[in-house]
Image 1 (tube, one colour):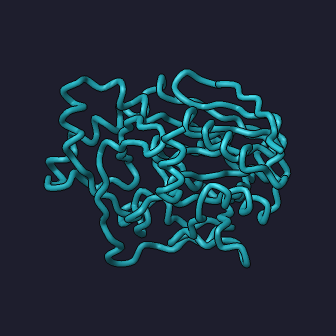
Image 2: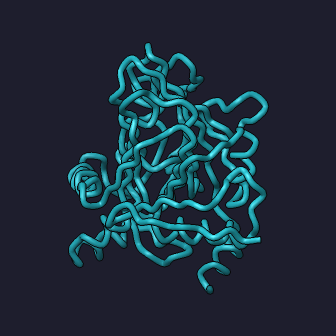
Length: 288
């Protein structure tokens, strides 16, 4: 039986909070389809008051596509699809503390991430989200036309290098440095969403190195302009976590930023990341 979802928008550019569904339950195909439609429409969706074991989070995530195993961050023992994102009170640097789109450094980037709050600080620790579809819509016709003919080169080489933010040592996370050549992959700078057909910018400060066919020095001015444009406040929403909260965001059109504003406190989250849905499934959704 399909559960009736109550959907409330939380900001103008993106974001909606959904109630009326228990994500730990065995959900019907109709309910999963409704959640998927809400994700595509709102770009990031939030749920409150959930109780998810790691296995239940995996089961929910797997309803949307095959789950990713992160190449640099160790997953849970026996549950490698589950990444535990933990900042201990003694840690100074958090994980995800900069604007980025998950896994754009892969040849086939992940399409969505599902983050569940286990333990939270007494204050702080919110996550910001920015719509890259709204960022694209706000560009001039001339810049849109220019960008639609360009590709960008993405890599983990900078962010997961010895000096990179993501590779810094943390008390309760095992993060490997990207040793040597880790691969560079080319993606369009304007991504057409395979389900909605909406266009979005697809570059980010963490993993985009340069524009394909351009020198790094030549790329810098345009990329810096876009990075600054893409985080404009009007394109964003902010989520205040509570234990049992879930955020599910679409990496094809959303940046996110985990705020590191809770010194001396512990924050424990669990994430599963969804790889692309089968092409046939995307085509069926687009036809509805």
